[in-house]
Length: 399
Image (cartoon, rainbow, N blue to C red; front, side, top):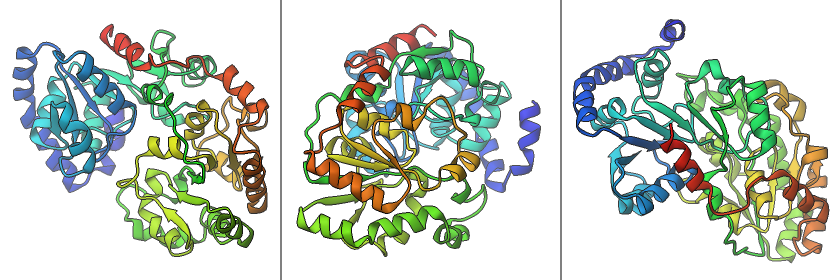
């Protein structure tokens, strides 16, 4: 209840409307729960079906069609038509039915914290206050390497915390204070789809993560932080990269294709970058599939985004463009167990010229990952098979 009282100051009018929906859905939810003894609800973001939640759902629907498993998603998004509708059992995100099933579910399954709830703020308030009684399986959005304080055990109600490596699992137990039995080494569901790769030899992917301090606080609009974005190291460094003459000449001479695909939280500011980078494709999250983009690319430029684990898993070369390491470690995620110099799967650099050098060197090497980094990949990953969804399913079944 202490959690609920601390959050009351953030409540807006729309949250009060959501509260009414939650209360009204309670009785129908209890009736549904009595009729259907075991309901699993899977969700990612409102408009998404790309991450571990989707791959888990697909696995269950195709292998256990008798299961009462449902997926919550907006019916207006492309992923609903192409990915979820053919699998069936879709629930319209945010609808009254979504609220009813949220009460009725026995196991809630998602790779995100809070996303996928019919009313993210109020439902999290109800969950943390103990009103919802379902088990929570946290499939993870990526492999954890930094100190992610928002995932600490006292801030969440996870009954299953999926991990992919021995080091990651032990770090979560030690640093985030979860019991051993909650944190299980199962592998990310989406990795089952990373073993059949056909690379587009001339495609370079630029996929940095976001910055907490540049994203609008709760209740603010994107327009409120535009000037802050423009004055940030993030914006200035990528603008410099996109306009680098040596890079642009190299792209043209070798017929390379550059795709800039920022993190979901930075997508609202995509136009700011589009105006400054002719010749660079700015990818909208609604038009590009993250996993397919990673599979297609021959080379990756990233910063601290955990998607580099997916790329390295496929043993493809990359470079870490870490121009704001100190600021990132102070304001975003503090340093964890992962050391880029000792554990990284590519060079860590700080300047645009160093990024261009790394790209040219890799190009001249046929975009082949260096042997040192291949050895690190082999040593880091526990599983390299197509059984991640199966392991996740069996663990959730046992909850």
